[in-house]
Structures are given as structure tokens and as C-alpha cells.
Image (cartoon, rainbow, N blue to C red; front, side, top):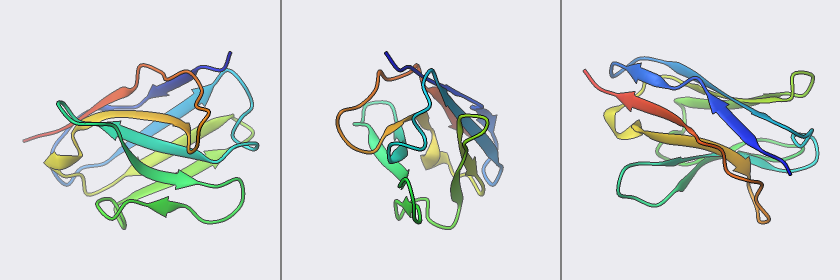
Length: 115
């Protein structure tokens, strides 16, 4: 079974930056459309950005212009560069496929934006 492992989260002040990483136990980034999701406390998981096998990413309006998704096939890693962070970006961030069927969800990585 494929497992996702997210890392790179932490505590950052408003306006700061973080880069999240996601690796998997399988070489999936070339075969499936991938996405970053986030879940804030007490809310449902939401899609932040998706990236197709080929083509341009699609960002949620709330992060457009601040977040950048990329993938390194050789390293089997998906990245999320987050700039100009806001307190409302505070959440646990996950990566997975964009569409069902999903792989096993990882533990996620906590991002906290606070002064």
C-alpha cells in the first residue's frame, strides 16, 4: 500500500514562509494528479492546490499568489512553498491524489501562523 509522509511544518510569524515536503512509498507523482489539502481545527479538510500529471496547477483563491506547488520526480517528492503566511493558513497539511481513490492519508504536518 502507498503511504504519504508530509514534513516541513512549524510555527511561523505572519508574513513568513515555510516549505512543505511530501514523499510516498510508491512512485505516484508521475501517474496521478496530486494535491495538497489542509484541515483547520473544527473544520473539514479542504483542497489547497492540485497539480495534474501534465499542465498547470490550480490554486484555491485563498492561497493564489502566495503558495506554489512543485514536484521533483527524481526525488519522488511533492513540495508546497508557502509565502506571506496568514493566521488563517493555520492547519494540518496533507498531500494525496486529487481524485478518488485516495492513498492512505499520512499524519500531515502542522502549520501554525501566529505572532
